[in-house]
Image (cartoon, rainbow, N blue to C red; front, side, top):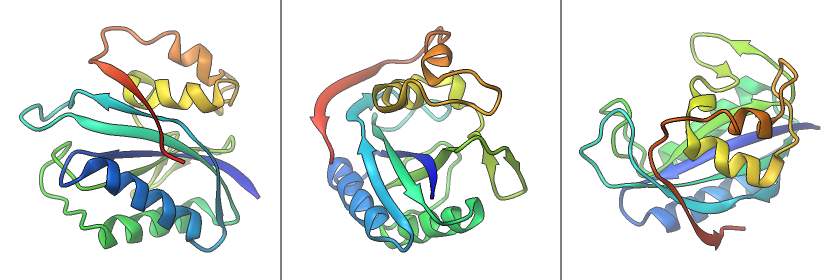
Length: 164
């Protein structure tokens, strides 16, 4: 089994419920088991700012799926929860991103691991550090080391709600 980390985000409809539903669907998917989930965080939008704040968390999983199979499974869950891709970085019912997949580097048209720009985003790194501060990036740095380098970040507020 491979250890991977999934970023979850939502700012449309009922965001907390959307994330809870996504977690149940992820854990119920073939060859995936959730082993940890961070607290929930409320974060300012980036890129496209004229939208509600996001609710975010990170899930640690064990999976027997390849990175591509995991991506396809997560996209199927997004679609099932009403995800519509219209505006880049825009509002969404649910967003599921593969952040890390063991120490693998993946760079295809469909998938990049580690997730692009995750090292620059508190809404990814802070919840990831909460559950896996010692996890490694493929270059050998720990999640805690990368998180400690964050500067000029938008607000990322823990609302101390456990999701799992």
